[in-house]
Image 1 (cartoon, helix red, strand yellow):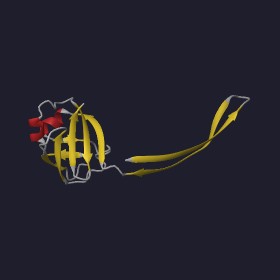
Image 2: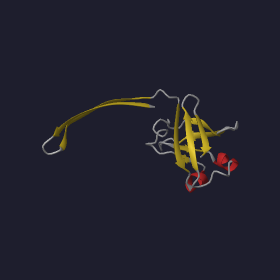
Image 3: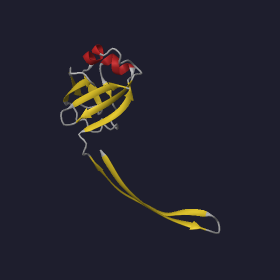
Image 4: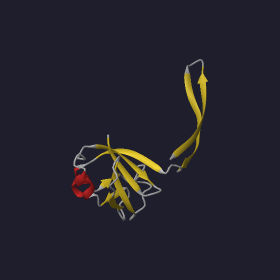
Amino acid sequence: MNIKLNLSVEVMFNQETGVTEVISCKTQGSIEEDSKIVTMELALTETQVKFGILTLGARSMIGRILPPAKDLQVLYMGQDKRYPAKTHKSVKGRIDGITSFYNQHTFLTPGSKVKISYNKENALISVQLI
């Protein structure tokens, strides 16, 4: 995602008092979703590992663009095995059904910091320990 922002600030400086005053501030921007891969970082919680879910948050970079009730696949970076998963039907930013993924990657424990990448083109979630 690219964010382009033009900021125009008009200021006035009073030489006698040494005070700078903002007269006006105008912004103009746009968000472009040209990237096929969106990445974020998070720390796994006990709930996520215990119940085989990923809660990315509805307002996170990935959570905002995940469609509800969509089948996808999860993999650990550098490995070939993919695990089926599905986005929650009503909770934005939640991925369900990855208990087998956690069972095979026992080093992913509560508190582990991970980098999550979502490839929109092929509905693939990649997880990497950081």
